[in-house]
Length: 200
Image (cartoon, rainbow, N blue to C red; front, side, top):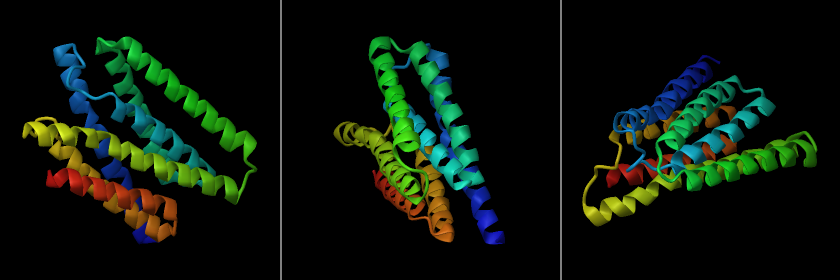
């Protein structure tokens, strides 16, 4: 049981550290009073991802998942609000945010009302969260095309790559310890994306 508690704390520390890398973007936005050269989609997909895993953690009564994803959802919401404030393209950002809100409401209705409570509900939610985590870590890979094309790594965050690697490793071990394949699958893929990003 001690090892599981150690992994739980590692997951909390590394994941909150990874979510905190957005504070750099927040600082840039506040200093320049602009959201130029900062992508919005990673904030939005991460927020949706946090909400899904938060619900999964609540259903599994897993305090680690609940704590990490509550903090993550709050931080991502802060980043989204700041981005909305500083962007010149408010219409696009607002429509994407409203669409994401619709996805959250639709998902909540499906998983809470349509599906019967129990293992089927947990399995479908776990699979959905795993797929969404993969998409969340694929969205920044769009930057890789710009990095390869321009030969400049200015948009690549080394701290985010390191934080992602440490986070994925801790969640993979945590999922293994719990024998929760949904946590392991999303973390193993996450690790693969980080390595790809780190290589470039």
